[in-house]
Image (tube, rainbow, N blue to C red; front, side, top):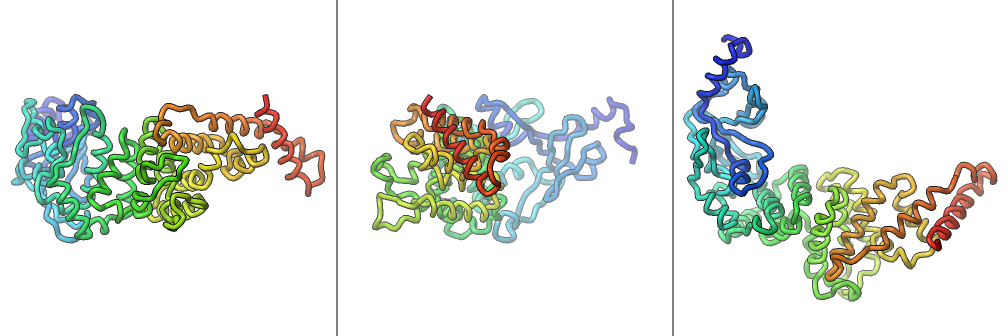
Amino acid sequence: MRDVESLPRATRDSRLATLRSYIVGGAVRDGLLGLPVQDRDHVVVGATPEAMVALGFRPVGRDFPVFLHPDSGEEYALARTERKTARGYKGFAVHAAADVTLEQDLLRRDLTINAMALAPDGSLIDPYGGRADLERRVFRHVSAAFAEDPVRILRVARFAARFGAGDTRFELAPETLALMQAMVAAGEVDALVPERVWQELARGLMEASPSRMFRMLRACGALARLLPELDRLFGVPQPAQHHPEIDTGEHVMRVIDAAARQGLGLPARVAALLHDLGKGATPREFWPKHHGHEGRGVELVRGLCERLRAPLECRDLAMLVARDHGNAHRALELRPATLLELLQRTDALRRPERFEDFLAACAADFHGREGHEARPYPQAEHLRRALGAARRVDAGAIAQGVEPAAIAQAIAQARIAAIAAALQS
């Protein structure tokens, strides 16, 4: 077969033009909503893998035939159907062949709003009512095949976090919620691998309304299976000095939305999500006080992050915030020596950038309290001033003038004095 790259450009373009390809999925959905279209996916009908390669497409799919366009680099997948063969999200047999129709391909998709296509002439192909559900702002499954893939529970919850505010706020169709609940009851989410759970949770946390993801997971019962440490916070009362009219789970939902409003990065949002896990382990007889919850929380955070195989930077920051967010809130009351201890425990002297993430997560916790959304959080600047003063101390010069056994104490005393002076000025 003649190499497609050696063909005249006009000949190659004419052959590419013979493809029966359609733009599908999120690009169609977002275009109809008037949102920016980031990536365009294409489905090709009536072709074979050999024909795609002959046209210059580069195969990249592992589980089913996906190809990169020789010019644009966009993804083109052969139309396919799927048949459930085992539990979990990998238990599928894929059939991709020239006889699969566009409607059959769209039928296997998760939601009606993702099961639309655009033809080359710009006409909309909408066999399952996706445009009507877009207008009604409803998430609705396309078919009963939705129940075959537990990842779809996570995806729909993530979409809730993305489309969670203003004119683009979507609600879940009651029949889709019932189907998701049945999937959880059947144990489908238990087959999800940790890496995929983390991937979807991390993406949902970075959306504009992350609390909606976790509320939806809780509504269908998946939160108790995937993040039981977080789920058990709902119903646990807050301490009286906070806002006892809502429980700890509701408080955490406010905190992660505050973190989103602040535009925090993923590690800080994870820390905001997990900072109060220790309250879920407080014996009921000690409610609403949660003395010692910070220490309990550290180990719960560690276990959850290791179970989901979260990145170390997310785990470590979340552990710091779980242990010391209360001390950060009390920073204005702490003595210089105690402030130095806090700076040392959080490794702020060596890692000031991470300490900024620590402060941001603590501020999100503060702003997650009812009535505190717009209030200042002076503790952050107070701690920054203390850190700046401690870091300006010339530890090397001090070390040269004292006995080796006394170096650490001398440096600490110099830093305490510097912090005291800086905070009095």
